[in-house]
Amino acid sequence: MKMNYPRISRLMVAVLCAAGVTTAVHAGERATPREARAMFEQAVGYMEQNGAEAAFAAFNDRTGKFVRKDLYVFVIDDKGVYHASGAAPEALVGLTVLNTTDAAGNPLFREMIDTTRVNQEGTVRYMWLNRVTNKVEPKVSYVRKVGNYVVGVGYSAPRAGADDARAMLERAAKLAKEQGHARAAAAFNDRRGEFVKNDLYVFMINMDSGRFEAMGMNPALSDTDALGLHDAAGNALVAEMISKLKDADEATVDYVWRNPVTNAVENKRSYVRREGRSLIGVGHYIE
Image (cartoon, rainbow, N blue to C red; front, side, top):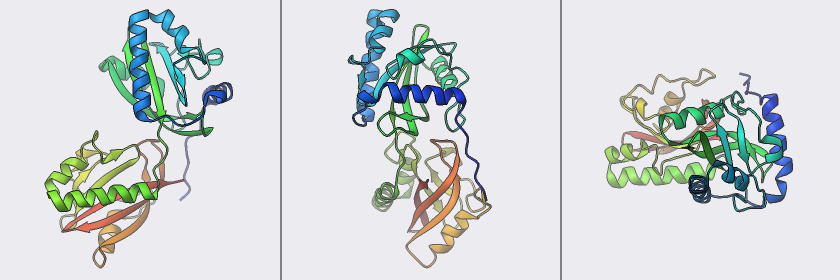
């Protein structure tokens, strides 16, 4: 089956090129989520204390304190117009990006605006250029409504690999064994907990009933049928997992599944383990 992946719009290409070329001097290393959060809170506080115009000047200063590693502050208004961007102020300030979509086809700026209309603060995931790697990668931005503007700071969330998936599976299986499946299922379904991280999450399926006991990507699927699921290529992936675990404690299954970070259908490899009469699995996406 041939996969069709969304293409970046022309406007996005222009924005990405501008950001990558004009800020390369600042891109020394990746920042952590904690560092992004700290800069975000600092930026929000600065704008609240000093007003919009002073904040725009500070955020657009590419040699100032609001541009560090691959972090920078951006500000848009309710119409999707850039007022500040430490990535490339000369190219981006004044640009209307309301209808711009990311590499997965998601209207990220509309989502930022809508998110902060419902709640003053939120988190938005999308695909964007990493100034360190010069590649389009998953990104997570903290956004907050300040007056008539949306202020944001984001960090790059690189794809998880096989080691990351296996490590999470080890922790998940240990939790289920030591604290029981009910407590483990609650932990796996906690979208803000340690078992949901960017494009990694845990799923747990009862091997007798074929129903989800937990599904970190979408906890609402708990207690729904998993056995009848087929991937985008028509493969009965859960049936294959259960079949492989009849004669083994662990197995690996390849299939095609939607990535919750990129929102694109991608190749995926899951590692599954039998714990009692439950199947516990964690997978990673393969480029």
